[in-house]
Picture 1 (tube, each protein chain N blue to C red):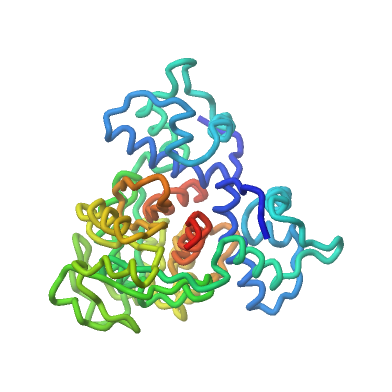
Picture 2 (picture 1 turned 180 degrees about the horizontal axis):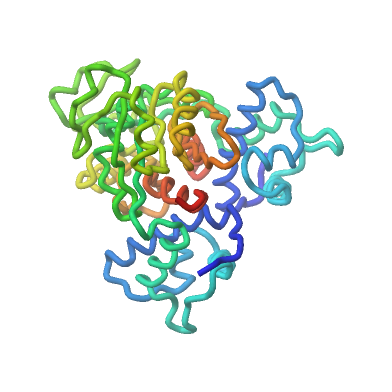
Length: 207
Length: 207
């Protein structure tokens, strides 16, 4: 199936919708109204209806959306209906946390390989993955891995991005606070944890 | 100064704008057009103008926004113009990464205290913070800390949230993939790392 071009803002909300749908599904909910979904997500219900209008409407008047069908549809649009393998570079605190994190599976994601520069870490097994030498990063090209995760110290971020691009990576999740430059065809998402924390005080009542 | 009620969606974008403004400022940029800012953020420029309309317009036709003034204004609205102290609970991989993370300062945030349950960790110094016994969590009430960060294992998340609420916390940054229930007056932001990764494959060209 082909879809119309979906705006970036909508694409960014799709995983949030998916997250809430998976949560509703775990709770045994079969159907969900756009109003109920809107509450869970924290947006207006017209926003949800508008977002879904880009890829067809699956709702039934008075019943709402079928939770499982809608989740499957969103996974298909996000191209995570089949498992996507990712390569992690940097097994420090964040990298170790990512390897130990159990939440990737439900989004169709799998950290299949991990690399580090430290001889102390290379060869060590963290969860199900054996840490490899970052010098052999290019081998992910053969394994057809297209997703990369950068969890190295700030000053090594750009160099790591360059290596990942050379190895054929098409999407990068960047945990370094530094801006990284990549060719246009490569998509980067930067997770700036401090930034998320920064919106909390707004909601807090005066001390 | 009082502001009109700002929609959640806008509040969520303010730290993203701030992040880009701080970046532009670091690069020595004095003014920025809404178009330029829109490109950096990845939204439409009408969205930016609409968002800014909620708290006044600081732009000058043909010149754009003054980067430093706009950043200061956003900090004020987000209530991070004065440093906000946060309490971290759980000093495992994620907690340690947070303590070592240098990016909080520029958003006016400071992890002032850290707690853990493990006797091996209590008393240890990580960066500038000495890890304290989680049994003494209530003391943050006296220190007037209003921000909490949950970085404990999934099954301890709700219990930790309850304790933080009891200790007077008004805002929680939750790194556990589990949904946590809190009273209405407390604001929770959940960081689901897998979710962010889930939007990447959409942008990747076919393998």
